[in-house]
Image 1 (cartoon, rainbow over the protein chains, first blue to last red):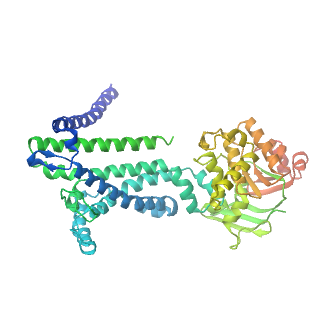
Image 2: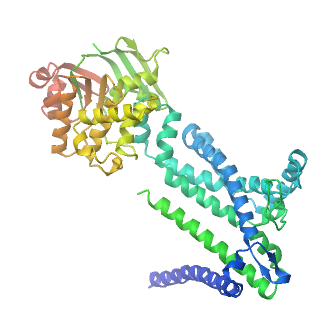
Image 3: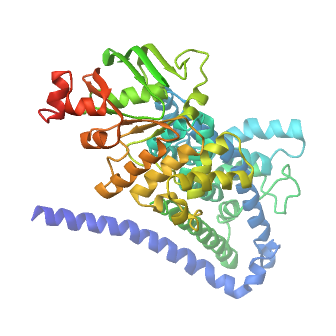
Length: 278
Length: 249
């Protein structure tokens, strides 16, 4: 009897979590989609974002989001993979036990702290050494690149560790060095996990808001170089939702719906890639 | 003598895994090493291509000469040693790559990149294990889609591709059914014309069927080493007799 009650209770709790997710999804789409139909897809994906004149084109923000995300991957993938490979294959147990939790701790630092460090250290550094306003694609990419490290490192590490030892032995027995084994065998064998880690990191980079607002400069134009300032979709929502009304507010929800779709697609790809391992 | 061990001792930390082993293995013969589980036969096999280096805390004393070269001397090139002394493992460990890439793995490590040369090596190696005709149209498929027996053959072919002299086989049939085992044994008898084979097995019948010489190990010691016929019909040590007549192990 008690078991039955506990079971039902857990069921209700589990479904309320899913239920709130469904409600959020429904709300975002219900608020945002009508506006897209009202102004038309062509206008929605145009260059001109000028809420006071009723223009809600999000193209420059899409490009902005894309640039900082690609930038984050350019920074995050080499560092993340190198770190995962070192931890999984070259370091001692002691180093693994110390470094892995520290890297995972990076995920727990509030994004506003990343943004703060960006403003205080990175932005002035870029301004004095490379020119431009400092608030830029470059600054956002570096900060985001660091923020996605935990995702890339820990998932890639786990998938490298999961490669059976018999493969390593077989490779060494053919005369391969450790490095050859990593490059020619372990990375291909762990490929699905590594790709998934990159896609999940990408999702995190696209969705990140606070840190980007603080270091990107948020100018509404398509950047011409990595030193120009940039505005992303998430920044726009966070910056404007406070005072937006009517169509403007709906347009911000439409941005949210667009982001939602992109991130859902990325997650589905990540799940399918990892699922294929079996 | 292609392999000679003299006064070979091996320690895992404080545990002595191999005790004062002396043996000589002749070229182009199949040498079987038998004994109950945990007697050190796999450990002995793994001395010959220094796979024990991968295990922390292993200490080896005494000498092992392969082709007259001390494999534990600092002058010995470990990578070249492993090319010369190939190993087949208990469970087929075909890599999660295509059949072609599995065979080409070794040659590529040895910096062979020319496509035609690689194709020739793959064909030659697969032919040597009687797989080429079966697989020639499936070379791009994943090696993991093959049966256990074919995977084990593939692993042997992968070794042959780097042109070894000695093949170490660590219970290569233990995960195969009797028919597949028979086929692998036939293959070994064919391969011995070109290679020296050392096989560890806990299957005495297998040793009796294919080995020319047999060593019997117990608790880290090599109790007896002799021709297969002598070991199985007229062993000189009582413990060998007890083991082959099934009193223990």
